[in-house]
Image 1 (cartoon, helix red, strand yellow):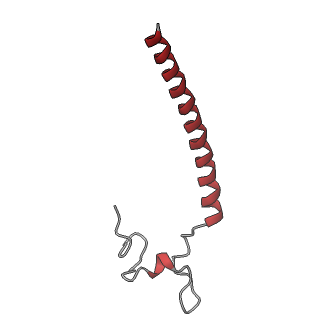
Image 2 (cartoon, rainbow, N blue to C red):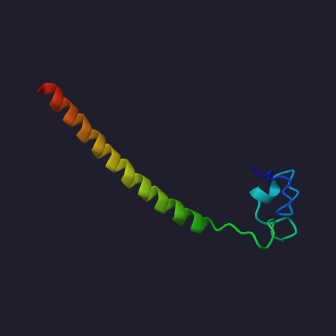
Image 3 (cartoon, rainbow, N blue to C red):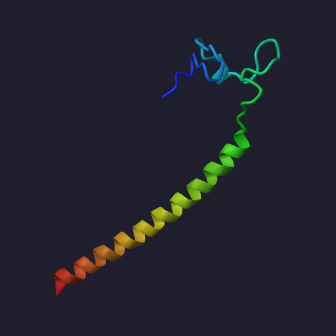
Length: 78
């Protein structure tokens, strides 16, 4: 795991954690180097898609579990 406070790959020395909390410095320049960016809208869209998939899987697993419980109950009854 990379140390985000002093990351040689990114060229950062962020001991106070300002780069990751504030996108713009007090002087108006970007906190992150120009080749890095974080688009919150894109992140949310990707996360929403993942959550939709997970919700579908949860519903499917619930149906499978309910079916298995019903089959077990019927087998025990007979």
